[in-house]
Length: 507
Image 1 (cartoon, one colour):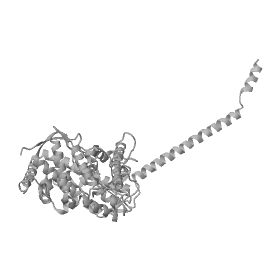
Image 2 (spheres, rainbow, N blue to C red; image 1 turned 60 degrees about the horizontal axis):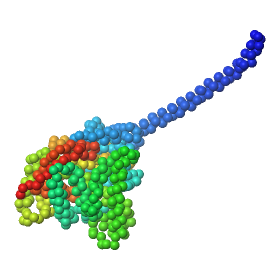
Image 3 (tube, one colour; image 1 turned 120 degrees about the horizontal axis):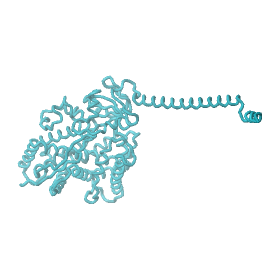
Image 4 (cartoon, one colour; image 1 turned 180 degrees about the horizontal axis):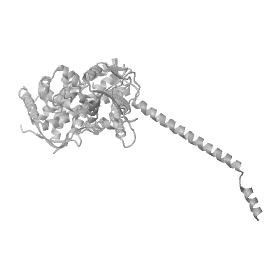
């Protein structure tokens, strides 16, 4: 029995040499396996580390301005969009100006950016259009207007001159004198009369609709009575996403704005298509002129024409409506300013030969205090969070290098709210403009940009605001109902709106 058991054990037990070989190979495989994984992980960590290092230390043929590039991919975009509940420079810009000085680098919406609050450098940059810099928009804006973000969208030389002259011919000084001013006054009188019948209304929404309807009618004969759709609301939504991170997934602001953009673009395309197909004589508005010029100018494609009209609508609509809303809020809160404004406009009425006539160009130019109020509202409003240019080649400034291809963001609020230039900068003080020097204004007051790209709608904006004030203060009384909270996010916003009541004055 013992023998049998012994033999049985001997038969079933593997040879010791086999075990040694098996375990030796097994351990070798384990070592190789973990070695491979260790190499893979090491390479991954090294790649990530190298990528992060390159992100935080961009290539530059010199010394970059101080600053931080933030987190990979998103940069400092999240911090940039944190609202500041004040008219003051956004906390994002203010903190970095204090830490780094008037010139610093960052990364916004995936793009390396140099932010400047240096008035001398900004003035220089505006004079270098087409030489050192070119017009530039963030990717989100380019996509919202149907452009390829990778391509330059600046128009220089002949094309820029064509668009500028066309705009001046239809919304410039001569056009305003020849009838646009009186048409604006008619629309403003009608809208104010309608609003006076309401117990209260949200001013920003209503004035946005009015500005959109008037501008769209002037540009391409838009019939707001027939269309019925509130396209001004869509443009308001588009403005909120102009420099947002271009994340096009359901639920994001950018995704919603793209839908509004498609509808707004379709409106313009449909009108363009109708005008091109019509056998009727064109009426001579802005779009009519471009349609006529398409016969001879090869650069005037349908896409280009739609982009130009869309751009003019967007720029004029938001600048005027936001600045006007801020001005009304400030006038309500500062009765002494309101009283002097009323006195100036009532004096205009008393000196008018025909009391039933509209505002003349001479009267418009004589409204000194009104222009001071408008300048102060533009200064405090600083509606554009930044004016963008892209460096065509490396730019040297104060010992630093701005690499070619980088975006330069000029921040109007940082200039226009600078306590070293404007005493008590957050105070609403129109009288400060009495003795403001030309040199100070040229470098520190840029609500309409600068250089060859100075906004052609500057006079158009001032005329609409002046006319609105004239009709309002000579015919109505204002009462604030609620709202008016201000924030920068980074664009100027009004929280839950500014709700007011206007009532007819007893003549």
